[in-house]
Image (tube, rainbow, N blue to C red):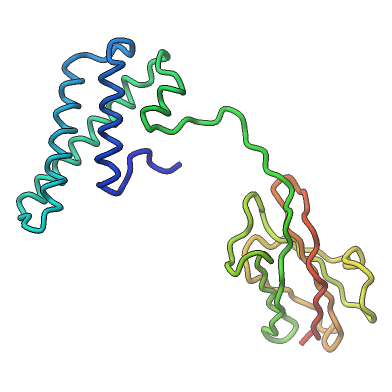
Length: 217
C-alpha cells in the first residue's frame, strides 16, 4: 500500500494543515493529550513556514536544511499519532478519511472476468523456438489489464486452419511478455496456429485474440 503521507512537499503542506485541524477539533473525543496537540501544531507551523521560505528564489542552504529537518519532525509526529492515538476505536473510518488517511477495505474487491482481448506477434527465435509477444488490444503498452493474471496461450500444429481456438489443444500460461514456445524436431517446417486470451486469478477467461500462424523454424 502506498504511503498515506504525500511525498510532494507542496501537497504535504496542505495535507498536514488539514490533518492538524482535524486532530485539534477532535482532540477531546479521541483522547489525545494536550501536549501532543501542541507539539503537532508547532511542527506543522514550522514546516509550513520554512517550506514557503525554501521556495523563495533568495533562499539559503541553511533555510533548506531547516525545512528538511522540520519536515522530518512533522512526519515523525504524524506517524506517532496515527500509530498510537488514532488506532483508538472511537476514531471511525469516516474520521480517518477526513484526516486524509487510507481506510482498509474489509471486503475483498471483486475482480471481473477480462473484457478485452490480447493481440499477439510471433517472432522466430531460433531452431524449434518461437517468441510470442502480446499486449492488450486497447493499449500499446505491455501492462496487463486490471485483475488479469496472465495470457492463456493456446496452440497446435495442424494441416489446416482451425475453425476456432477450441481446436488449439496445447496451452501455456504466460504471465509476462514475451513468452517462448518450444517445439519438437519433427514439427519443424509445419504450421503452428496460436491464439491467446486474458485470464484472471479465478481462472475466468476473456475473449480470444485472432488466430495467428507461423512456420516452426
